[in-house]
Length: 69
Image (cartoon, rainbow, N blue to C red; front, side, top):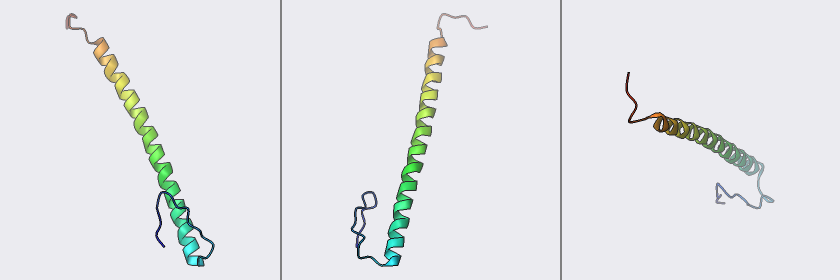
């Protein structure tokens, strides 16, 4: 039996107990990996948004005609 790790729609009607446990474990692992990737994506998006805001403010505050002290 071959599994598609992201799309597991196998018929689990005639499987042994070990196979069912392995299938359940794989499904839990896939779900936890998806949650972890989503969490990391959210953190990266917040970081990018914060950095672009900082960068834009820096450029806006930079005035070539301003005298340095």
